[in-house]
Structures are given as C-alpha cells and as structure tokens.
Amino acid sequence: GPDVYTVQVSYDLEGPLDAERLRAAAQDLLDAHDNLRSGFRHLATGRPVAVVPRTASLPWRVVDLTGSGTGAGGADATAAEATWTRLLAEERRRFDPVRPPLLRLLLARTGPDRHRLVLSHQHLLLDGWSLPLLTAELWARYEGRTPPRPAPYRAHLRHLAARDTA
Image (cartoon, rainbow, N blue to C red; front, side):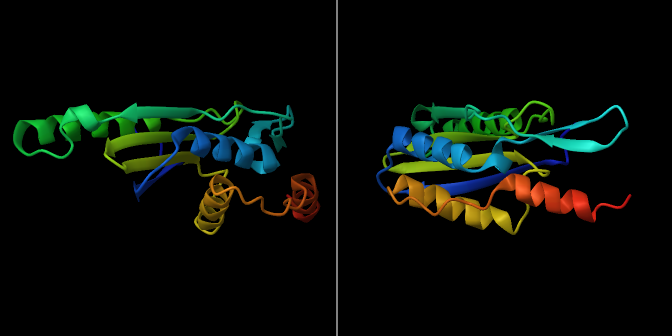
C-alpha cells in the first residue's frame, strides 16, 4: 500500500518555463542544504543517526502529457487522468531512509506554457513549516537569485543530540 511517510505536493505552473533551469535550481538547492541530502540509519545500539553525503544527484523526471488529451473531454480526458494517476503513484513510492536524497521531483508539461511540478519527499526531511521556505528558495534560485548560505546542519544535529536524553 501507499507509504504514509511519503508526502507529495503538486504545483500548477502557468507561463513560460525553462525545465533545465528549474532542474539546475533544484540541484543547487539540494547542494546548498545538507539536510536535503541526509539519509538516516540506526547504529548497532539502535540509536538513529543522520548520514549526510557531500553530494547527491537530484532525482528529476520530465514527462510531456500534451499528447495524452489533458485538455480534451471524453475518452482522452479519462486516459489522461489514468496516466496522471499512474505517474503520481510511481512518484509516491517508498523512500529508503538509508539511501538519500529523500526527495524527488517530477515536472509534467500539460499544455502550452502549462506545467505541473510534483515534489515527493520523506516526512523525515521536511515538514509543513519548512516546505513553503523550500519552495520560495527554489523559485529564487530559478530566477537567478542566490539566498544566503543556511546555518550548518551539523550544528543543528549536535543541538538535537545534546537535548536527547533518552
């Protein structure tokens, strides 16, 4: 069945879009934030730890749905809906916490100057508070603006470890 810890967010985009520039902006985002590259495993003692690789390739997929009848009615619309449902299910597949990154992006072209961007991620990685910040930074990078460097993730992990008394 579906993984309740895989979160999926979809954005409908209208207007000209450079898919390669968006992919590069998303990769830059991944490169800039250690926590987005994090994986998680358990030590022999059972204690969970974060593992942060120096680099990670962004899982990115582009599909063109313009030929699948997304704007038409009847059988074409039914086929388009079935295709979209299948794509979402594929993107919703379970993440393996020990194999980062724990996010992936799907960009679907749905018409002239119309796209749908789907961000799928493991809930360990992002919560409802951080998602709008991540999205804003993605678009800033897409527009060529470089946000300030984030605080070191290792410092945050040390802070959490110091608070953990269990």
